[in-house]
Length: 254
Image (cartoon, rainbow, N blue to C red; front, side, top):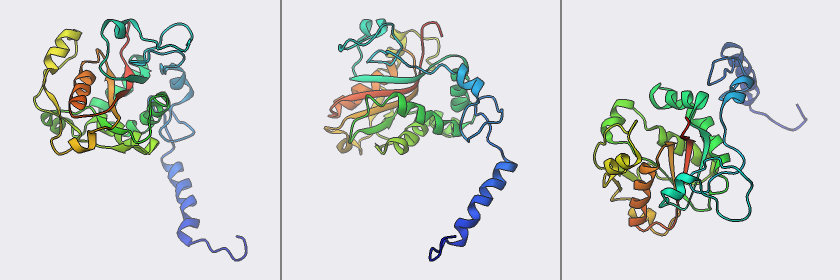
């Protein structure tokens, strides 16, 4: 210890406690359970097999697209066919393989701890759409589903994303006014019909929306109907521009 520098005893003991905990509970891959070098990480095999999105992407939804950027806006075929009501969107992963397994574990497998590393990936994927003074809002769950699941996975992602980026979060900015049927297997038109009028802004949060850029956060984007419904609700309440950031994007071949 350097002369004249006092280090409280608790700070001298803590590294030893950490070492002991690592011996008892060594870090494991959050996908397969194999030993890893750090907490909340992936082993080399799972990292290689996880479909991270990189390269040129659609500006509206984050889907990978062929070619190089030429200075003009790029939209995938789906976003040309169905123009999005939001400004820009990004995704960290393709919804398939190990990525799909991890997201299902987060959503239905009682694995909320997966939200922390997932938010880091989202922050990296969304770096081009993040704006100063942006307000983060998760896609809401109906209260009946929230009671059953005990947590909203999108709210967990938003919470950790706020910590990663330093941006403000409003977890209840949006609410579902009615329970929608399960949307798995539905067409884009059926999803849009089921979500018509069922998402609104919280009546006590409207002042936090007016004139703000809003970042909508969700775990998976399939057709984009849910995010579109959220976007319309925010715009109707006076938001400036809406951006979306999701953990994974469903590809047609997924």
